[in-house]
Length: 158
Image 1 (cartoon, rainbow, N blue to C red):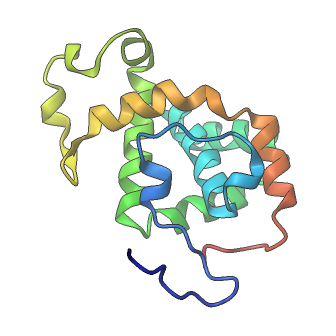
Image 2: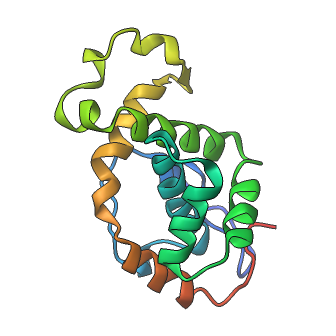
């Protein structure tokens, strides 16, 4: 049996793969850390961008719904983009927004040239986008807002 790695108190014990997995996630705030909820908020921005919103308009829309500022949304996005795993996740969120109806209504392989959109760590970006599109209803804006308010640390991503 493998031993758990020793971590210092308060250190993030989740890997980026915890948030990118295909496993269904609980929408309950207790089961995610602040980074996971910020990722979920920025995913919502990217979904809107994929649907045709400009970046600023999408950030304004989500920030308003979450009771946050656009500057906070931009800071979260910049922090997430430092990780290649999160960067790919956000790219796939944008793809999910652009092809939302086709991904929810069918299989990603029905989209012509889905392979040309690339892959990351052996998984096609469209496959990951399909999982994001189908799971987007698991977390409502109210749940995200509540979880972010409960987060006592102002910036875990720095």
